[in-house]
Length: 167
Length: 116
Image 1 (tube, rainbow over the protein chains, first blue to last red):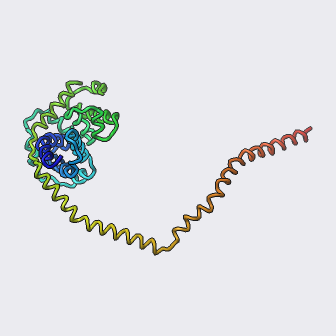
Image 2 (cartoon, helix red, strand yellow; image 1 turned 45 degrees about the vertical axis):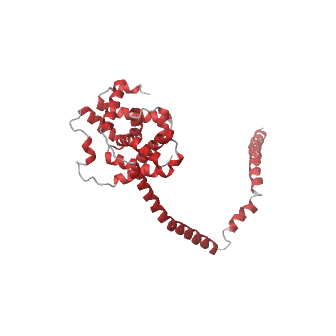
Image 3 (cartoon, each protein chain N blue to C red; image 1 turned 45 degrees about the horizontal axis):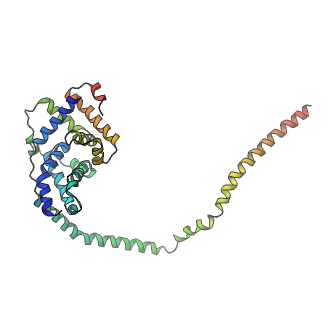
């Protein structure tokens, strides 16, 4: 795997990776920054990756980057310039109110829970695969997903009893 | 429950579909090369600092003489006597209790004999 295959990988998967990162971070600028940082770090090791595992490897690296203390620290020290940032432009203000509320609640979830929910309901991974990405045990994944959904249920208006059977 | 999960799937898919990114492989490779060049530029400085630190530490320790060696030899000389002392303690416990029992029974028997 050389430079050409790296370029091909970026061309093919950058959209999917940035979309995944947007769902994690909630901001397009952060997502692009995160994916770019990860790809810059991955490129020197590109020769060691196989085409079959490259996407999963980079996705895991993006998740780790999102969960890392270093990024949390750097994000905490950035002062917002204004409310009309370019990354907010792709959110339609006329979107359904329930969807907006769900999205806002999703952004408030703890990072591990949010990553587990996104991996389950966007990337369609199994508990085992999510455990591999997050580097935790399967029961922990179930707990993250269950708690994440329980926190989101108010936005969708589902009664609490219905969520207890999840898993 | 399935409806809620479907709802969540739909919202996540809609949000993701709105995102358009413009990352390119050559740009990322260029940035990686620049990063590597920066690391290569700093590497000799970091290596020199690390070597200097090791040398200073070694000289500092050597300046103290053989003092750190002495405490290390002490436990070797004192170590052999300790295992027997541990075994003595464990074996002496039953004898101590048995003595205590005999001394307590002796006065009671003498009292009985005295009353008689």
